[in-house]
Image 1 (spheres, rainbow, N blue to C red):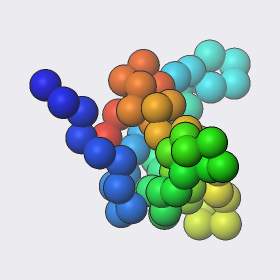
Image 2 (cartoon, helix red, strand yellow):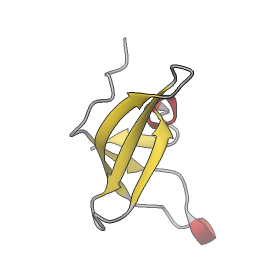
Image 3 (cartoon, rainbow, N blue to C red):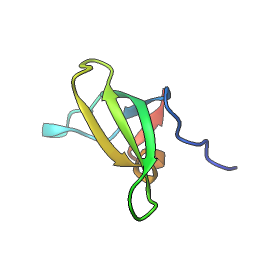
Length: 71
């Protein structure tokens, strides 16, 4: 089954353990998707709980079911 494309507006939850072994429980909204100079797609994410917190990750990392799940 093909994986769903990562697109702006989608919401993802981190599922890896955070600091001190606690679940990360962070939810992130995809704000934008773009490719870097090598053509690798990346997504800019904004934290649902703190809209001032952003991070950019490779789309492959967000699509990894051991790291993120779609909400």
